[in-house]
Length: 141
Image (cartoon, rainbow, N blue to C red; front, side):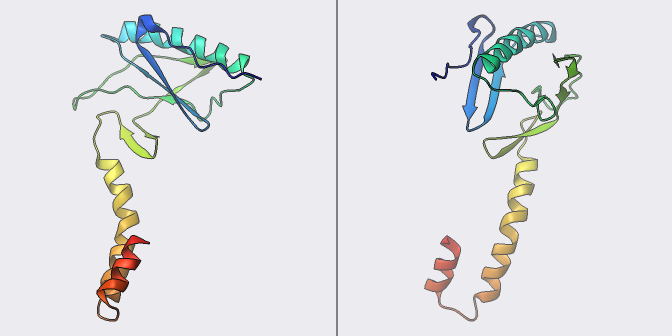
Protein backbone atom coordinates (compact mmCIF):
# COMPACT_ATOMS: atom_id res chain seq x y z
CA UNK A 1 0.00 0.00 0.00
CA UNK A 2 1.34 3.44 -0.89
CA UNK A 3 0.86 6.07 1.75
CA UNK A 4 -0.02 9.42 0.26
CA UNK A 5 1.32 12.61 1.73
CA UNK A 6 -1.26 14.74 3.51
CA UNK A 7 -2.93 17.57 1.65
CA UNK A 8 -1.42 21.01 1.64
CA UNK A 9 -3.93 23.70 0.88
CA UNK A 10 -1.64 26.28 -0.71
CA UNK A 11 -4.31 28.93 -0.93
CA UNK A 12 -4.62 29.06 2.87
CA UNK A 13 -0.94 28.51 3.78
CA UNK A 14 -1.44 25.25 5.69
CA UNK A 15 1.65 23.26 6.63
CA UNK A 16 1.15 19.64 7.72
CA UNK A 17 3.66 18.15 10.18
CA UNK A 18 3.67 14.41 10.74
CA UNK A 19 5.67 12.81 13.55
CA UNK A 20 5.14 9.15 14.44
CA UNK A 21 1.37 8.88 14.97
CA UNK A 22 0.79 12.61 15.50
CA UNK A 23 -0.39 14.99 12.82
CA UNK A 24 -0.26 18.75 13.26
CA UNK A 25 -1.33 21.47 10.88
CA UNK A 26 0.16 24.96 11.11
CA UNK A 27 -2.13 27.54 9.59
CA UNK A 28 -1.91 31.32 9.36
CA UNK A 29 -4.72 33.72 8.56
CA UNK A 30 -5.11 37.49 8.84
CA UNK A 31 -8.37 37.33 10.83
CA UNK A 32 -10.74 34.95 12.61
CA UNK A 33 -13.26 34.78 9.76
CA UNK A 34 -10.59 33.70 7.28
CA UNK A 35 -9.11 31.34 9.90
CA UNK A 36 -12.49 29.61 10.37
CA UNK A 37 -12.90 29.18 6.62
CA UNK A 38 -9.33 27.91 6.15
CA UNK A 39 -9.56 25.53 9.09
CA UNK A 40 -12.74 23.96 7.77
CA UNK A 41 -11.18 23.56 4.31
CA UNK A 42 -7.98 22.01 5.64
CA UNK A 43 -9.86 19.83 8.11
CA UNK A 44 -12.13 18.52 5.36
CA UNK A 45 -9.09 17.64 3.21
CA UNK A 46 -7.31 16.07 6.19
CA UNK A 47 -10.33 13.88 6.98
CA UNK A 48 -10.43 12.65 3.38
CA UNK A 49 -6.72 11.88 3.53
CA UNK A 50 -7.12 9.92 6.78
CA UNK A 51 -9.97 7.86 5.34
CA UNK A 52 -8.09 7.21 2.08
CA UNK A 53 -5.11 5.91 4.06
CA UNK A 54 -7.28 3.84 6.43
CA UNK A 55 -6.44 6.02 9.42
CA UNK A 56 -8.80 7.59 11.88
CA UNK A 57 -8.85 10.72 13.94
CA UNK A 58 -9.45 10.40 17.67
CA UNK A 59 -11.73 13.37 18.24
CA UNK A 60 -11.35 13.08 22.03
CA UNK A 61 -7.61 13.77 21.74
CA UNK A 62 -7.89 16.32 18.94
CA UNK A 63 -7.73 20.01 19.76
CA UNK A 64 -6.64 23.26 18.21
CA UNK A 65 -4.72 26.18 19.60
CA UNK A 66 -4.86 29.78 18.44
CA UNK A 67 -1.67 31.72 19.04
CA UNK A 68 -1.92 35.37 19.98
CA UNK A 69 0.02 38.10 21.70
CA UNK A 70 0.00 38.55 25.49
CA UNK A 71 -3.42 40.17 25.55
CA UNK A 72 -6.53 38.04 26.04
CA UNK A 73 -7.50 36.25 22.85
CA UNK A 74 -11.20 35.80 22.30
CA UNK A 75 -11.85 33.19 19.68
CA UNK A 76 -15.19 32.28 18.21
CA UNK A 77 -13.68 29.69 15.88
CA UNK A 78 -15.55 26.39 15.96
CA UNK A 79 -14.36 23.17 14.34
CA UNK A 80 -16.52 20.05 14.18
CA UNK A 81 -15.59 16.50 13.33
CA UNK A 82 -18.33 13.90 13.00
CA UNK A 83 -20.76 16.20 14.84
CA UNK A 84 -18.34 16.68 17.75
CA UNK A 85 -16.98 20.09 18.67
CA UNK A 86 -13.17 20.14 18.86
CA UNK A 87 -11.71 21.81 21.93
CA UNK A 88 -9.79 25.06 21.87
CA UNK A 89 -6.69 24.43 23.98
CA UNK A 90 -4.64 27.03 25.84
CA UNK A 91 -1.56 24.81 25.73
CA UNK A 92 -0.43 21.61 24.07
CA UNK A 93 2.59 19.38 23.71
CA UNK A 94 4.28 19.54 20.31
CA UNK A 95 7.38 17.44 19.55
CA UNK A 96 8.15 17.17 23.29
CA UNK A 97 7.79 20.92 23.84
CA UNK A 98 4.95 22.45 25.81
CA UNK A 99 3.55 25.37 23.85
CA UNK A 100 0.88 27.75 25.04
CA UNK A 101 -1.28 30.17 23.11
CA UNK A 102 0.99 33.11 24.05
CA UNK A 103 4.15 31.26 22.96
CA UNK A 104 5.56 31.54 26.47
CA UNK A 105 8.14 29.08 27.82
CA UNK A 106 6.61 29.03 31.32
CA UNK A 107 4.86 25.62 31.13
CA UNK A 108 7.83 23.97 29.44
CA UNK A 109 10.28 25.46 31.94
CA UNK A 110 8.21 24.21 34.88
CA UNK A 111 8.11 20.71 33.38
CA UNK A 112 11.88 20.62 32.81
CA UNK A 113 12.54 22.07 36.27
CA UNK A 114 10.56 19.31 37.96
CA UNK A 115 12.59 16.67 36.09
CA UNK A 116 16.03 18.25 36.61
CA UNK A 117 15.62 19.21 40.26
CA UNK A 118 15.91 15.66 41.70
CA UNK A 119 19.03 15.02 39.60
CA UNK A 120 20.64 18.22 40.86
CA UNK A 121 19.83 17.26 44.46
CA UNK A 122 21.32 13.79 43.98
CA UNK A 123 24.48 15.23 42.44
CA UNK A 124 24.85 17.79 45.25
CA UNK A 125 24.30 15.06 47.88
CA UNK A 126 26.93 12.76 46.34
CA UNK A 127 29.57 15.49 45.92
CA UNK A 128 31.32 14.97 49.29
CA UNK A 129 31.57 11.21 48.77
CA UNK A 130 32.73 10.71 45.17
CA UNK A 131 35.35 12.08 42.80
CA UNK A 132 34.68 14.78 40.23
CA UNK A 133 35.01 12.18 37.44
CA UNK A 134 32.30 10.06 39.05
CA UNK A 135 30.06 13.12 39.38
CA UNK A 136 30.58 13.90 35.69
CA UNK A 137 29.74 10.31 34.78
CA UNK A 138 26.53 10.52 36.84
CA UNK A 139 25.68 13.89 35.32
CA UNK A 140 26.04 12.68 31.72
CA UNK A 141 24.20 9.38 32.28
